[in-house]
Image (tube, rainbow, N blue to C red; front, side, top):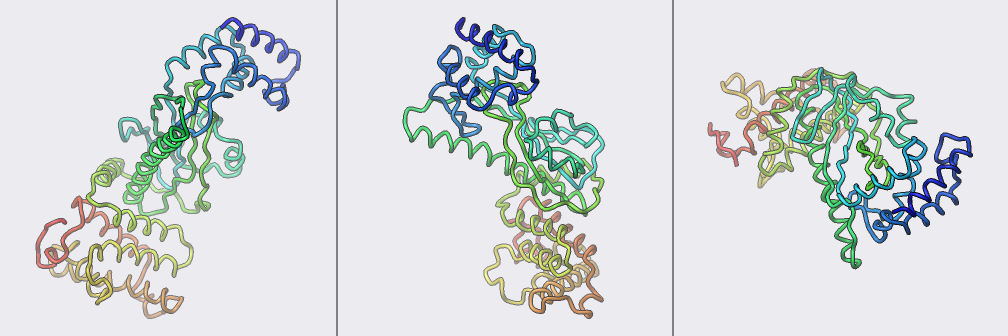
Length: 388
């Protein structure tokens, strides 16, 4: 490994003489590429040749150069850089943190919500979470840093580097990456749903990016900036953390959850829509998805079925069931007006209020969630309590 130490020592002198504090300004792109080509031929960096990073789906041969240059600029001795690289390449594992910005909720303390995930309130989000963002994300938030919390998911990638022997092996690498990402996507979506059920306002998890907190060599770059959703416009709401924990647990364990997820997501859309008609359509769809689940004849007497099922789902007395049936009918009338007329009539508006309808649908979804599965509707409307 002495060859690498000598090369980095010479490179350090060149960097010092350039008089700049930026890696990009010290070396132009051609010079950086030359460093990559030379360093990858020297142990321990040569071990990265032919490898792939399954967490990022990219090749590993060139990751040592930028990593080494950053440490040289930071004052680390060349021998220490080489020894650290050798150690981390031999260990072949890395711990990453996926950070997702949350808007719309207020929490007071850092909350651990699973073995490897936390929600940070705005005042406790570590500053380096912002410094490590991709440049486009930092630029975006110079004008709009109004997130109220952050979801942090830590995860191990081991092995961090894989050396494929064929194209099929490379396909497996990308499959591993997709599975890892999809598992986090599913958990993040359920966190958002649990927050929505804990609040009456908008909730948005609007970006995500990976932080290499350990500065491990076995990471391609600080990735990945996913989509930025529509600008969040509503005020944040305080939530009961105990409720959120309960809802998240039940969402994780709900039987055949796809329809419930769709209903919650539609309720979420209704909260970010501006037009009353769009709100009514999405909220009405949420109600219909929730109460018409697994119905063999969903197009027959929908209004009556929605009201009857809502009544037996929420009410414990005749009076309470009539109120639920009435509220379902008012919402469905608003939805029908919006779909078939393009506007909500004055007659319908006398009985329909979005805030009340939002709370009503939220109660429906929470009642289904608490059961752990969708009820058998034919059983429920005759006074039963069975879940399917």
